[in-house]
Length: 91
Image (tube, rainbow, N blue to C red):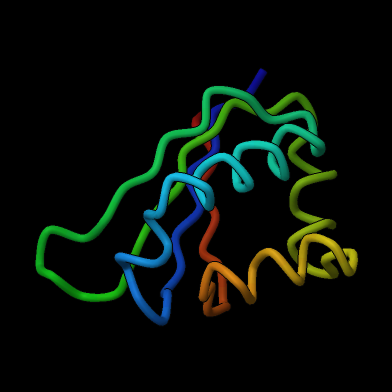
């Protein structure tokens, strides 16, 4: 199991933080083998956010983020996610 931190921008932080979006995000990450999803927002008030997650297969998550399937892409758009993603892996 690896710990992963993914950062990116969003259109609207309040929209991204909606409880239904948190649930969808956890479900989407869970479908990639992720668990323990935690959301973070930038202290400086900017529209930058981060998600930490425990993952079984880092390569699967990286591949999925590089080319999201239609259902994930739709959720990302609804949540206001703005690529690019910066991914950190616990070592």
